[in-house]
Image 1 (cartoon, rainbow, N blue to C red):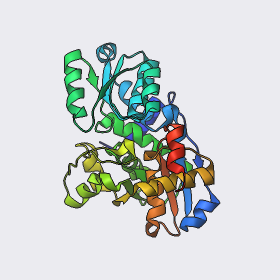
Image 2 (cartoon, rainbow, N blue to C red):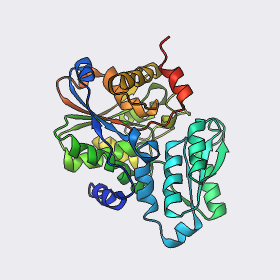
Image 3 (cartoon, rainbow, N blue to C red):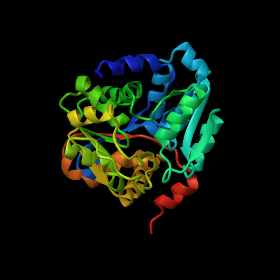
Length: 317
């Protein structure tokens, strides 16, 4: 992949996605000792950055592929993004979702018109199930992160961010399978080559950090974490080379740190975000040694969370 894939994607999807705002907070700046800029992809269509990659992929299908339909697997945000984009473009969509996915995400996916196929994430392999259904039904498989069109589409969030907040010294992005982080690295190569790019993942799902240290893709069991969007088992064949060649490091954070980040975001900016959506902010709050005195960009990647669960997660003990 090339850095120019990102502006090409931005041109392709521009009419279909929001240019999300960048917010600041003096209280947050004081807390971490840096100037912090928050890219609010929780305010994106379908509630997360994933819609960028979804539109970029679906808009490049052939006429025959679009007529036959697509299939995707996802715990929620990619599911909703593909369902929304497919519905808007008139493409049939089937989504493989874990049976314990947040109900708000399942309901939204069905609401956009997609057919949802449930599975057990701890006993079945979604990649195999998706591939089998794609073959049986003649569908085009659109994976959640390991696809060049998805990566380029996700990179448009960072490209916007770097134009809205120029001169960033550090950019922190959530890390699950690596689509957003890889896209951020590609965008920064042209727009902010001096910026240090960090991925942030849950402690229980540290396959990205392990992979970076080992110099190869490391597979783990499905992690148990409140960050349901980062319950991935490995980086992808497309995302790993980009991340290993461009990330300053991969940081990890605890579930308690995610809860605190959700509280901080709500109290300082009045924004609601899901646990996966605040991974980068939790990384900032946990690893302040990497940011002091600089201009720091934080991607808040999604806001799709059931309000009852949200209230329980941010409640202090």
